[in-house]
Image (cartoon, rainbow, N blue to C red; front, side):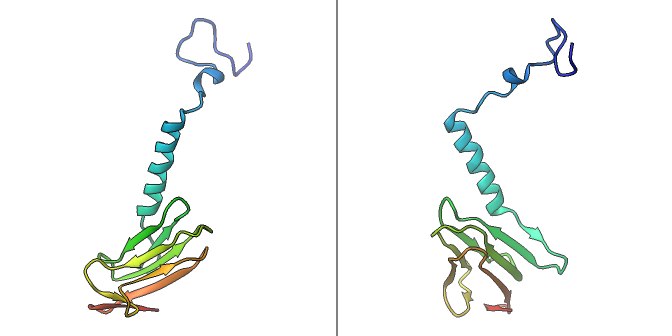
Length: 121
């Protein structure tokens, strides 16, 4: 018996072919959407105490709401035509506009809030 085979009658182990069945398409789509949502809502703290928001808009356009931040860097990671829209739902302007769009892969913007509006650093 090889190391990778289970002893006969031992039901605690499954053959690799039994354990690794492909997911149905709907389940796979659901898993991918959950991963996409997690990635698009994850906040990564940087060593400077600001926030780094990494967004992938490959499947659909993404909106980033700055309302709960004081300083933030937003990065669009994909090469799709979908944009990452940066806005503040509390009414503050972003560079004197209601929102700005990141449209190019690896485009980024570092912003800081002065209390009433957002400015590029």
